[in-house]
Image 1: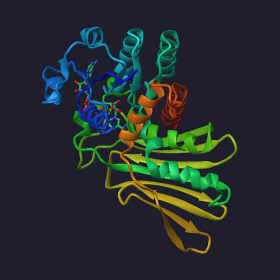
Image 2: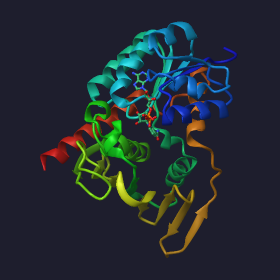
Image 3: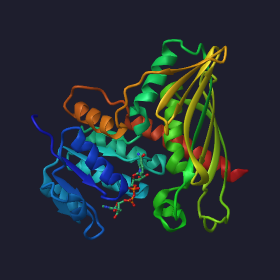
Length: 322
Ligand SMILES: NC(=O)c1ccc[n+]([C@@H]2O[C@H](COP(=O)([O-])OP(=O)(O)OC[C@H]3O[C@@H](n4cnc5c(N)ncnc54)[C@H](O)[C@@H]3O)[C@@H](O)[C@H]2O)c1
């Protein structure tokens, strides 16, 4: 296989990010599809790609090796199965799907087609997260004990976007944002044996109460007892995007704004660990292409995607019960 034919379904915000990432990785997508009239054509620009507004026509005509699925979560299962049935390898955006049953349907389709299925849990490709995991494996902070993560900011007009429509999004900030957090926790510490959550939405100066939660706190316990606290919100300022792991002899903190990975030693002294930055989306698609070529093993499997969804579904149920 000399060159790979790449397509994208969904040409909104993250569809544009995938297009740019594929180009940066050395693969210019050949076909783009979006059911909103004109959306695919607008993203095509002067790239020479073909624009489609019907997914069936796109899959039949474009002769793709790989498709990035960049549409709202409720569409992921149907579109992924359609692409897999057409023998196309699938990189589907997060969350894999809003329910475990849909994830299972997608996994069965991939197995049937003998095609790869991965999920856009892109923070595993953030070089600082890989460096943080390596530092823990190297014993830099002793025994990891606690994980603390805040992914929160203001999403403008969220009450008018599909993100707050439960039928399209499958949930609120838990399904949308905590999916990255629970996946990072699993990336570092493995499977989760307990999840608890509190969640809220209220009318504020930013807009009316939503039909889904806009802010949430999750606590996780790993199989071997690492504790995690996750905070997420669409309606708090300023934006804070940090991950910290505390161990018995020190801590590691990554701030996505400064892009610094800081090692806090037990004596209070801090040092910055050198990390060469690369756009995580570019790293993600480059890796997926390598996997399709048979040169690498998936860093994010469909099982990882399903496990994340299972944790989120449990968190949402817990939040509703209290
Ligand atoms: N990895 C990340 O950090 C990250 C960041 C943002 C969004 N996302 C995810 O990406 C997905 C899309 O989010 P977005 O912000 O790009 O949304 P968006 O609203 O900007 O774009 C979605 C596009 O999909 C199109 N679409 C909807 N249903 C379709 C269908 N059935 N077939 C073809 N096109 C269809 C819409 O017309 C729209 O153009 C979501 O799953 C979201 O959670 C991931």
